[in-house]
Length: 223
Image 1 (spheres, rainbow, N blue to C red):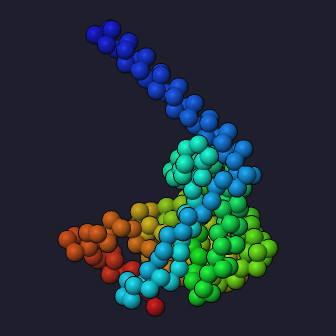
Image 2: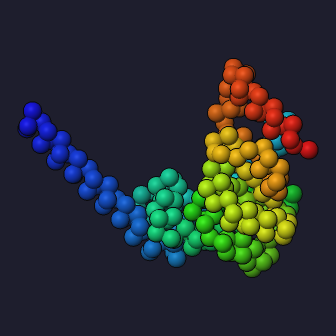
Image 3: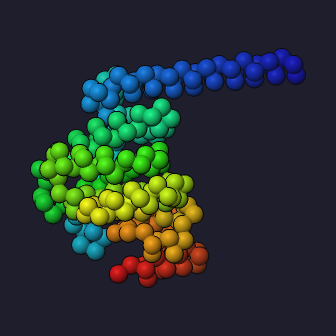
């Protein structure tokens, strides 16, 4: 039993060392690679469910790693938030997305996600509007998506950010509705243009009465 426990301890220490090494490599990569423009936008079409027409595209951050290929955000976003590099990374990806979206049909909307860490930055709306001005992108063609849970973790700052962006013509989307702590009263008070109901409710609404009730209530709120 002692030998087995010792083996487990060695395995655990080795695993932790591996995790820490990987995390440090990601942090180092962020510091070196953000200025090089290796963090880029990938675009996911957004369709009208009735007509099938594409009305916009969502920009998703990816790391175009020279050795590892395309790396998804789950790996680097948490480290970027922990180290305070999320702002610089966002600015880089956001600028690239806007420059590409300027070439699209002017009827298409560009959607961009804002992370929980960014909502702690009271200058976030200023940063977004500054880049919009620099690349001459119409604010009414931009949607900023904020997850429900991140919004209500930083409600006071987030309200100021949301209101500032909305006043400049930027469209606002509440993402993953149903996974956080908001109430319908909160939703009425905040100037969101769209609400994206979490897929767990949509997928089960024909089987679970509670899911159907939530989806119905949200639809009833929409003009």
